[in-house]
Image (tube, rainbow, N blue to C red; front, side, top):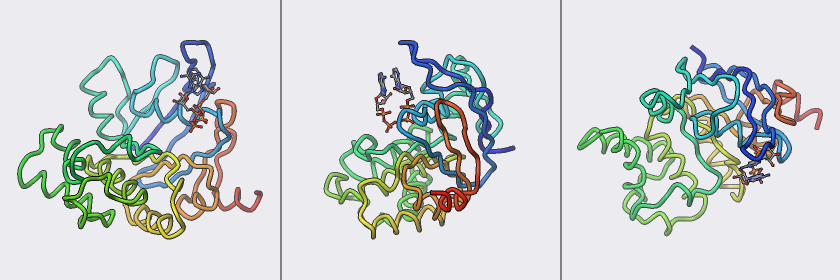
Length: 228
Ligand code: ADP
Ligand code: ADP
């Protein structure tokens, strides 16, 4: 089973704006793929379809073979566990008194408790190098640290696919490098929305270019960098 299969996905917002015109894409298990494209191309709209936040258009989305069906609440819950989205602003994802509680929030919601929950939290924080700040309030951390904790909150759900929106934005060069190393060390499937072509080239062997609501190119990222 591929991690992600999008076929014939078309979507118009309630005001009539047609954002997607028939998007097709297949992403294999463990692949790292960049999603590039100009502002207004439909990147956010596509990402919001991957876990059923947006729905109601044409076409299908499958995550690990499971169809995103907003009418099937059980399947939708499972899809939301499988698709972990790291939003651009980490402060949208961190709202608990401590880092540990933020990372525990999702898995606790899945029903994990006790030692199993602790292990899940410690493992996620360890992967992003943030275990040492587990007991601190997220707002006491630097922006780069908060972004890494936001990644940990998603990893703690053990997603099938990790979606990152502009992961390199607002990071200094050292933090960008650290985050790149972390992402390269993960075994999960990655879809990274970005305008940062060098960062995409470093992390993602393959790129999809979305333009005007369709996939305009699907190519090795290094080819795109050479054309740039
Ligand atoms: P990005 O390029 O990072 O996706 P956008 O500027 O496209 O950011 O969108 C920012 C927010 O504004 C999103 O929540 C999007 O849904 C909303 N938005 C974008 N265009 C419109 C529009 N024409 N009408 C209403 N909301 C919009
Ligand atoms: P991107 O993320 O690539 O910048 P978006 O998915 O945000 O693109 O937007 C795709 C198109 O949909 C744009 O024309 C945008 O203005 C429009 N759009 C986005 N959000 C909304 C919304 N909430 N209502 C109406 N139109 C929207």
